[in-house]
Structure formats: C-alpha cells, structure tokens
Image 1 (tube, rainbow, N blue to C red):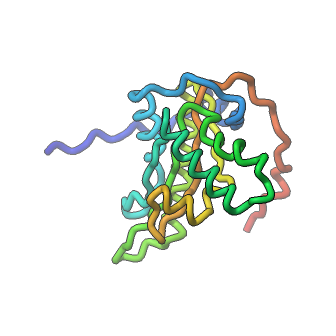
Image 2 (image 1 turned 135 degrees about the vertical axis):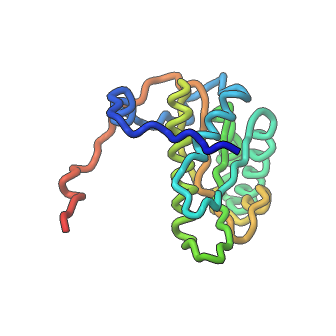
Length: 199
C-alpha cells in the first residue's frame, strides 16, 4: 500500500470566502423539486461526513427520506400529534406534511461511540452538528436550497422509536434539500465585537 498523497497547503480562496459570507438558509417551505439525484446526494453526504472527529469514531449516521418515505413518516408524525393534542384537530394535516416541504430530507443522527480512550461525548455530539452544517453547505454548493431544522418531532420519544434511534442517540437535525424557488434575504447578525473577548 502506497502512502496517500497529501492535500495541498491552504491558500486564499476568495470564491469560497464570498460563498461563506453570503451563506443563508433557504426556507424548506419555499422549496420544490427536483432534489439531488442519487449521485449528487452521495456527494453531499460524503462532504457532510468530512468533519472534525476526534479519534475517527464517526459518531453519527444519516437517515434519508425521499418519495413515499416522506409520506410514511409524516403519517406517523400526524398520529402522534393528534394523540398528544386532541384539542388541535385542525393542525394534524399540517403536521403530516412536515417532510413534504422538500424532495429530500436527511436526518443526521448523533450516535456516540464508547471509546476506551475517553473521547468526551460532548465532542462526539459536536461532530454530528458539524455534519448538519457541512451538509447544508454542500447542498447549496450543488445549487440546491438547504435548511437545517429540528422542530418538536426531533425530540419526541415516539418519533425517535419509529426512526429506530437507540437510547443514546439524538437527532442533531433534519436537513431539507430541494430547489429553492425564492432567493434568501439577508438577516440581522449580531454585532461581532460584542461577542469577542481577548485573554
């Protein structure tokens, strides 16, 4: 086995800097088809997985919802919501449509790994969160809209059982990917100097 070829040293890339400076989520409710094809989605996921990962544990996994799978999970969400909120029957249909807002939805699951050398769980959780962000960036770099959401069903025990999560797993986010139909508008950002201290 030959040694892998090293990556080039970092160099200034104004195109990437401009992309990051203008990054803005695209609202899932403002997406339509098409979504990424299989090859493109594989590339988006491969980029999502290129994250800081202490001791190479890969403490995350992905669940893909496309086509009829979005309807199936939506029906389950609707049933759970109806049972928990009998006084809100008019909202059940809205809840069943959550995953229909975009043609592709990817659940990023934080899945900590037992590590004899003691990689902290917190670091593993952070790694899964960066997967979410990388996935949004990769989706947009491929020309699609992307939004990172959680919403109530990301924390509901019945939904987590339906998704097959173990007791130690958590939903880091659902990434909605589709064709954006309206441009995103700039949003107010914090005054950066109020968020900086120097030691």
